[in-house]
Image (tube, rainbow, N blue to C red; front, side, top):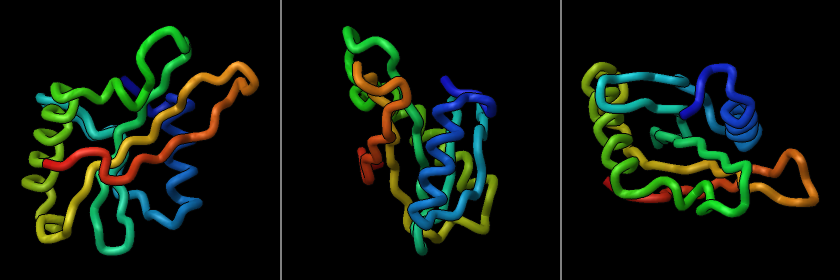
Length: 119
């Protein structure tokens, strides 16, 4: 889980802005889950899950967004859309930004997986 001070989430937000996305919100919490980053990519609303792994012995960061996590993100996105009528008619997608450990780099580059899963 990330917080507003999470360095990976901050790097992901900066990276997305460098790629031309406009941030709509961060760390939006609902009873059933949390949205790390909500951004606008052109006319598409993007719900971004930020994942990081520090130990290469475990499954990769991107792989940690399993079905259970996907359902939580879908629920949180649904609650976001209900609470924010402005965005209801926008097409939506779910992306993942993963930070995987590398022996040669203490600060790995983000791996941006667009449309990582569908609702």
